[in-house]
Length: 263
Image (cartoon, rainbow, N blue to C red; front, side, top):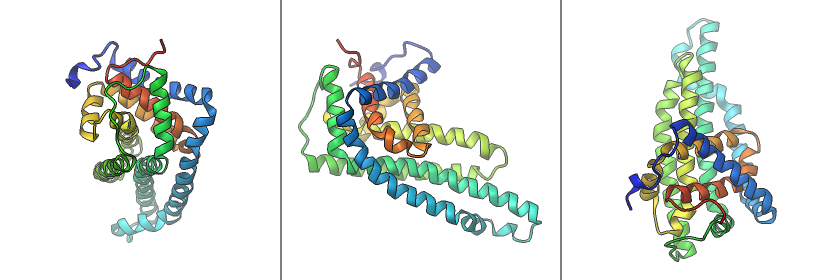
């Protein structure tokens, strides 16, 4: 498959980015029209949400201690200077925690809710013409592959997140530019993570889906950033997860040149 020809640009970069964000809205529309199935998808997200809210609360509770731990050089500074550098350090910790939290939340939720999200993705595919080239993948084999690919993605996110964490110490830039870059990085990895089910259904693994999404990166980024921002809202990840799975199925179909309009 020639990934460079799958999704040739038909609009500008901004238009494609907005079209990607629009796929999440379409996923929400499918959510409204199939509430019974979609509500099942909230259950695993709710379980993960409780775990990750506890982890976030723990991070917030200890963030001052962590900030002091990484800034021992400020111990002898004036009270104002010491407080400023440690507030910046605390914000950097929260930013890194948020980035990793969103990605690991998605990975864990997809593993916990694999049967539910697989069903949601299948129903979306059937609505728009089925799955060309579908392969029969046993459940346990699919689960192992999904888990392995999720671990790889989270590890890669951590490697990217460390430089962003360090950059978060830079005054002004660390509180303005770095969060934007973090949202873009998180959005990209979310898009790659969420399209896993439709790609597995076609017998394609992580390297192939990355290559195919890169052929129309603005669309993938638009979808991923929209999901990322929704996941930052309290309870947003729990409520949006089923719609994100539906929207990701549309993104996968679009990226592979398959119809996403009902005939």
